[in-house]
Amino acid sequence: MNAKYWKSEFNKFCPSTPIIVVATKTDLRIDVNADQSLLKAKEGKIIAKKLNAQGYYECSARFNSGLDSVFNAAIQLGVKSSESQK
Image (cartoon, rainbow, N blue to C red):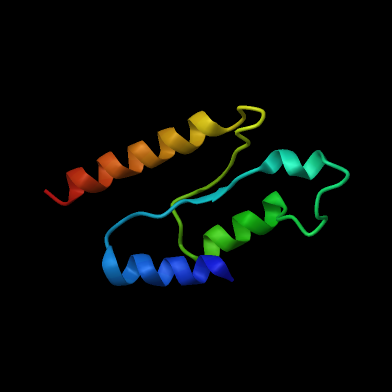
């Protein structure tokens, strides 16, 4: 699982950094020609929980869907983390 690799990298180099899991290109789920092994929302939430992530988000740049939620969550966690390290 690619997420485990990145979790270990964050733990090694940025141990106090909060992590969120983001599923991108969710518009491909409705594309009949897309790979049917795409991650489902339920699977993404399970991965986020296993990684002890601060949240799970989905977005599609193609449809401009979920982008605000992803960026707002990242900013809020960054600010919160920064304040707690002072």
